[in-house]
Image (spheres, rainbow, N blue to C red):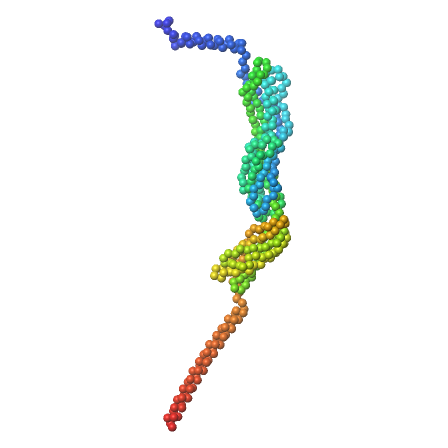
Length: 392
């Protein structure tokens, strides 16, 4: 039974036989057909060139770059990359190109040179606009600008919202654009050759190692606050009048750089004030000059609290140097109402009235006493006359 069995000690002899035939066939084929070597050439430790240079970013504000004071506005900033390759240094010299290995090295060396422009590309740009001036506040956070190759300008500008304080003086202000990006510092290639034993026919299994540098830099950005007319209140005087009226003198100064022509001050009142005279013409106000506007207002006696501070809104209508009609910011006239003093004539009149009343009362009492006395005398006379008649 063992001789007729296909299994001897656990081996399947027909299968084993065909496996041996297959191995013999592969050995014979490999002796006559050339095959690519499995050895790995051009490892990532072989650097053929070192390049010097990188991105060089600059920024400028689009448009005039002028912003009006006392407003919140948007500025757009464009980025440009002026990066160049400043030089290079060979790290490995290839002299003998007769062997497949050296031919592969030469091919990888060419790849490094072909991709040298990647070194000057700024990758993953992040830009934050910063101001250290309290009169200029940046309301927008960091912006992403993508990647920018050398010689290119950002296709879309960076947009930032900026608040310009009303106290900002005209002129140029330097802001800082804090920029972060990466750029390629070096690249090393490796590959396996495809060859016929003596000549390189091509490459396969191309691999690359990239070295990046993280860059942080600050780019100056200039914005200009426009010249303009700027009014401010420098003095307020109040004078109580009769019948709860108040005379208010307000001195306005042009603290700006541009004249205000044909200026008219307009006020708006609220309880407890009212007025029929809400405008005062002050004419042309040159930079640095001051003009006085006078208003007559009435205070409601039933609602006013004397000694309390009240505010009256005012604004100035004027023409700028180009003839454009403009309105100033609202300026508050802060006043404290004092109770009107009573006129001396009133006191005199009161004294006179009191004297007249006293005199009248005195006269009335005197007259009444005189009448009473006369009546008594008349009565006595009648009694005397009656007694005389009885005696007769």
